[in-house]
Image (cartoon, rainbow, N blue to C red; front, side):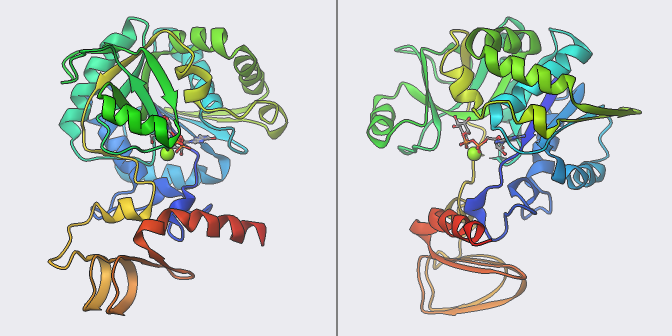
Length: 358
Ligand code: GDD
Ligand code: MG
């Protein structure tokens, strides 16, 4: 299986730790591994990795190489470097074209976002085994997580009435809806026939390209042209493809979910529950830490007096708080975030403002 790691997003809701120069995949978790490294190790655990392709921004190339070096991986490493992000459809399409050229139509791709957390590796490995069998038969396979809230930031996968959601069967997808509105999301949650799209995918390179040709031909053509114009270098077990701003700039911005998954009739789903989380906010990040008796969760150094349900992340210096509750406090060398937990997603507004003000 050929692993494709997509690592392009900045993850601005995890500012000030995640930022353009230190995006979410590089955030280190408690075990000392970054989300990117953990993604890689999880893929390796499937025991069937033939190559690893990473699609990322060109400015993150050396950092990414360093992360992989620590893992001493023994498979060919391919890098596809973007001058700027064009969202996931072009990134996955480019990986598909490169893998097809190198390994043929039957190359099985497992696409993994670099910034998710999976706590049950065995469940993940079992789901991938089921997915790869269906993918080999020409399906575009998604991974469906049982939904626990009416989240509007995810894709929803509708399965046939009365489907076995235990994960022992790969199911046909009746409908894929990317980021529904709140009302729809609430209906999906109540109806019991929808799963969250985990954002991981498995398919043959040939199937991906056939379906892109059917549903997003302009995008496929533009990415093909961008790859023809790309700069290339190759070493022992190592290749680097640099997309040029002129040709890649002509590619439309679209996500694989809108461009393909909502449109194709060849989408399947493996229901699974591998302790998956997208950790899109500090509130979600806090949820990963064991709370003390007062509900406080501390990573690093903190002295808390009469505080409740507060999350502190401060690896470099002591943070002290007295009499506060439901706060998120994140300290870094040059910026400090203090937010009410339920508003922690709005930190992205601060990031936008900082950007606008240069
Ligand atoms: N190389 C590259 N280039 N990677 C990218 C780009 C890009 O332009 N844009 C996004 N990515 C990477 C992100 O870093 C992330 O790992 C992954 O692709 C998904 O992109 P997001 O922008 O985080 O997508 P999303 O969270 O809004 O939605 C997707 O994930 C949800 C689950 O987390 C969709 O697949 C949803 O359907 C899904 O539920
Ligand atoms: Mg995401």
